[in-house]
Length: 309
View 1 (cartoon, helix red, strand yellow):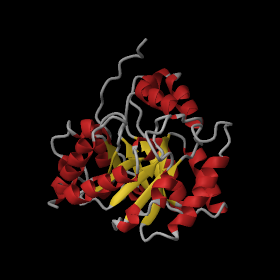
View 2: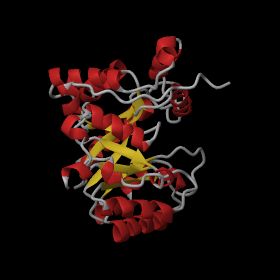
View 3: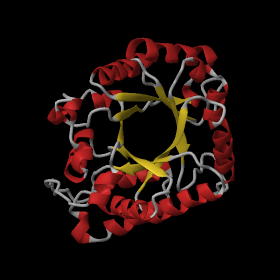
View 4: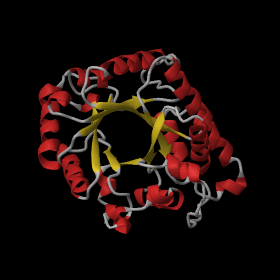
């Protein structure tokens, strides 16, 4: 059964200097099929925005490279996903890197295990991809790896975060061996408190990689609940379920105003807080997410076409 239809409303202008500062240099994620629907990225995204390209199993590498080429030509920093479990072998990885660099001048990558249960070949983790040395040999300037503020049951079947934390310690050590800048790009969450606790714990554990926190962009509530269940988002799912019980909110699209306002206030009060940037998952559409950033991000949300860049 479908939930009540959501009425589309204009995104209100919110005046919050802390949120505007927090959204500076935000990034966003696209897929080839969603990017095709965007007529002009420069009318939506600020100049130089980092754009991740999600590589879903079954997507031809040609489509990934073509999307990267288009975004690079528009002046954006392109960061394609390299999901270990869909990469057959070292030769395939080397080929992908060469294609991205040769055709789209890619210098950045997000390395992750990937969401498939059975590896297609030799790799099953981002650590194995890093250990090949191919990204360093190719001169990549930035390498991001996955972070999970609410754990990852694909990695820790017992519900703990032991394996996740061990992997983060390994990645922290690797950051001292690579010339590339590294950071954690996290799964999306809807509740600021678990995010703050997780980030503070990382610092206490000696993991100092900067965090690019995943935030779901505006979307219908049923869309977010579907993605939250599929991605194993735990404490945050309760936030959505509580919202679904509030009829006054059920009729309106979800917007990330509350979670970002709380994180921004925490960052303002604690400048050394290790969240460095916001990464948007535009689950309700790229245009909808970008328009929200324009309305709430001040100068940080102004698209390239308006700046003359």
